[in-house]
Length: 208
Image (cartoon, rainbow, N blue to C red):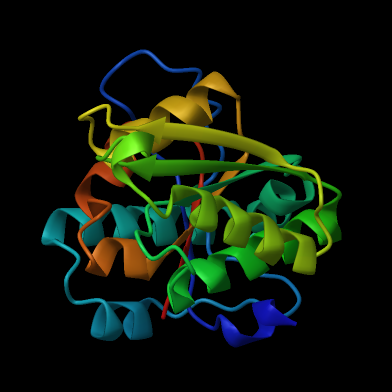
């Protein structure tokens, strides 16, 4: 199962600067089944993260230790709607996007959750001749994970930061968890520093 290969991952909650339906879900490493968390390995591998983002990480870990760790399981057992943001410009999907799709479907099956995919691009649909190919490949990869039916949104050519769009969608749909590959951060499509600002629910970051 794809989850077994993701040995370093993070749930991150946020305190947004604008009024949001913030549900105060706990920030926590995932302490169940095949998922483990290593703050040290995340630091070493993803040094691109700023010191501000790392401070958020420290606060997250501290909260988990204080709460006794059971909150991590509670977050996931209560997950009923997941968001898979796709900022990938590869119409056949990059390795990181495929990994995120596989993990999203695995989690959704395990916890009986729904999936919404949001495709984010600075360019309009008309300016991308391979737009339909991208959508077809998204559908194929989710169907491979057992999901022929899922929500699909497109936020194209809006001129907004992808992180802000992810936060808007997560807030509007009252989502429980965002699943995102670190590839989106390394490629600078998503700004890691803004995740805690804009996203009102936990974020699952998957290392490459």
